[in-house]
Amino acid sequence: MKKRLLSLGLTFVTAASLLTGCSSSSSGSATNTGSGTESAGQDSGDEVTFTIGYPAEPPSMDPKDFNSTACTLIGYDCYDTLLNFSMEGSDLEPALAESWEQVDDTTYVYKIRQGVKFSNGDDMTMEDVLYSMNRVTDEAYSMSYLFENVDSFEVNEDTYELTVHLKQPDATWKYVPATSPCSIVDKKVVEDEGENYGQLSGSCVGTGPYMLKSWESGAEIVTVKNPYYWGDPDTLDVDKVVYEVIADDTSRALAAQSGQIDYARNMSSETLPTYENAKNMTISTYDATDSIFLAFNCEKEPFDDVNARKAVAYCIDKKAYTDLIGGKYATTQGAFILPRTMFYLDEDAWNEANDSLESYQQDFDKAKEALAASKYPDGFEFNYYTVPTYKAGAEAIQSMIKESGLPITMNIIEMQQADQFSVSYGYTTDDDGKRVYDMLATGWTSDWLDPTGYMKNCLYGGSNYQGGANKAAWVNADFDELLSQSYIETDDSIRSKEMLEAMKIAVEDCPYVPMYEYKSNYIINDKFEYEEGPNFFWNFTVANVHLKK
Image 1: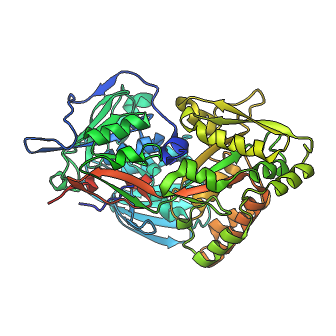
Image 2: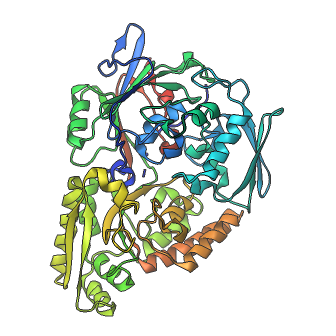
């Protein structure tokens, strides 16, 4: 059986809530063969059930929509990507591609496994592979940005080879085959069902270790072993996976405490004591790629002015905020929004910059100076958007600004959890077509350990669009040029220096206030053994969950 990872975003206290915020708006249910739910970890005869406490159901079961933790926790059980990330996150391993090579700076060849079947029994052909890859480039999907440097794909049906031609050298392309855009779908089924594919009214057909059995919107999703799994279904310890949709953090914690669920992740500081009291459950933590930061909307007044941004930034006590919201698994950030796990290209240089550059610690004198130098020396007011669950953090910042004595007024605007994704990703706009908020707390989980996983998504000008993760709506030509240059540079030491220079520009311009990074955490029934790694977002699968012997 192939080696898979599991681990994570796109969360205020948790990565799931600020990064993802998506949930299905559908109602009803989809069923393949019926449903039925056993209690957590219960065996039905020889059948082993694994129950996951699920904060939000996925928007669909089509890989084109896999851009949130809600998708991660089920999607990679049903689908395979071309490659997988290694457990430590920096290397790649075979999956549907059993081997691969970089022929030159812009050409990669992947040898695809033969004899693979989809969960409906159809053979996976090279036509399916080509269709799946072109589908991402031909249509505007949430993760299509990962393919923007692709010139073309071609396949050889005789040798089962997929060749990728890039427009220019790209130091990060090597990671892309392990991400959701490189999931392989059944062309015939997807074309036959059109927009219904992956929805409650449609199918979910992949090559992964499990297959969809039933989907009751707002309640539960059930998967079972895929009898056609190329990695051998008999090697899977878990027969059935039940995803209990429990949106409320406290209710999910109580479900773990009562033994209703076997697994949950990213416990908030408020619910952690409840999880810690759960019998026969173990909490594990690890360094991942998650961080929380505040985003200024740089397209709108007053935060179109860098000194207005700095005036607010210097009012905030980052340590107090981290203690209040982040809890025991959080560490206050330095100058960068990137977590320290991502400094691996040159740890000494990145750590030195992170520690020595301006990190906007609370300093009311500096706040006063910045306000005086801004376009708004007499003060201003702004709207800070938050979901009710994390209103305490917003109120803490509001209090800090009042304590400064500066003529700055922060208004708290509450949005519903269901609206968070639309607001933070810019789908909800004002009359001028701009993001509706002036400021909000947000976060990110990197696509990979390379610093570009944050820089391209959160800081690059080209990511400032509806659905883009540049939530500061910040555009800086010098930053963009340095980042773009780092993509075509193949020497990691030079790339690292170029990215560091770019990050210095971002720190000085203050589009974000780094708040804290946190250890990913999860709780699992002691009946099972399982380990996560930093690239959990792309490689979660219950195939890695085993019964303790």
